[in-house]
Length: 304
Image (cartoon, rainbow, N blue to C red):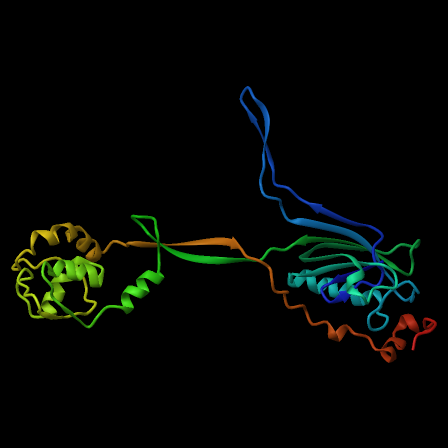
């Protein structure tokens, strides 16, 4: 026994045949003097095809309705809404033994896939009147999202706040006591991440010569901007190697862009079911159905 759901709508008569195709994207190329070889790629999107019957006015005893009988127009309008809204939905097939549909442990196999409605064709013929033959084609849907990344133009590395950077920023002390062997360049490099910040650090502390530090001297520490050495300033000690940072400083003050933005499309796991279209206004009550033209001549036996 089978139950077929397209979204939250149960198809009244399961199809007699279900065709599922796992598409591939492999490519065959010809190598010189070697013949054909197959380049294996990841599988493509799965496609599903099946044909169903939609009763126009007959209530068949083998048809399944969760609420009450609905004519073919109900389902056709639902298909139309799915198609033109482009809404992905869950395609569910429940295979179970007869008489055990309420016992989950006795289900033979489930199919639950996020899909979109690719094509559907309905045919009216005198052979199947007054029912409609409908051919349906579904295709697997994979959610995707756009990731925006900033890249350094020179290094081609991704930029952004990292845990390490946040930690360093949060642990900058308010003051620092000078120890033996310290240089202002080394202090700026250690605490602020850039030795070129020593000049503004010296200015913050009223130091005219960065080389003149006293052991035990207490310095004010702030995350100041990096800059090149003023022309009138003395060079820091040789251990601080100020000339090594001149190119870095010029880069910071350059008008040329230093970063670029790259957008990439990546697939993501389709964990959450999409919101289904509201088709509550399609629901036909028994009183309304009796007033429809197709029922003025004959009401299905047993319909209440």
